[in-house]
Image 1 (tube, rainbow, N blue to C red):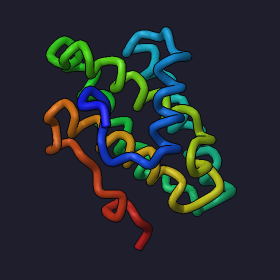
Image 2: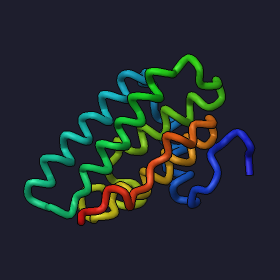
Image 3: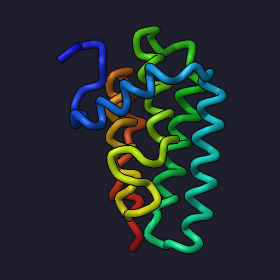
Image 4: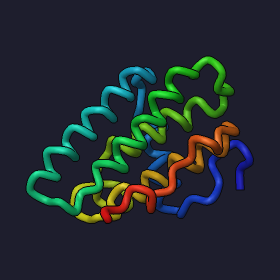
Length: 134
């Protein structure tokens, strides 16, 4: 495995994440806006599908806000992966469709956590179970 890429992802997650890197020319702030739009859509879909875990989506975007605010301190090689993780989240139809399943944002969470570990920000990692409905 390449030491300059996130670890612990499925092959499909890594493939989609890599595609995000290749097809993205937006700035971190523009990608953050895309992610915020995706959360807004999740909240809308939740109105008709209570299985959508928009609380987890909100937590993921909160992590993105922190990462974007600290952008200049992220190593250059990792910045592209961090942009990719935001892009991956914003896709909606990645490994698990975000709006069709109660675990729709869990693959996004795995990608985010892998990228956070790569930049030594494990304290920002998210446990999806913390956002399960009770």
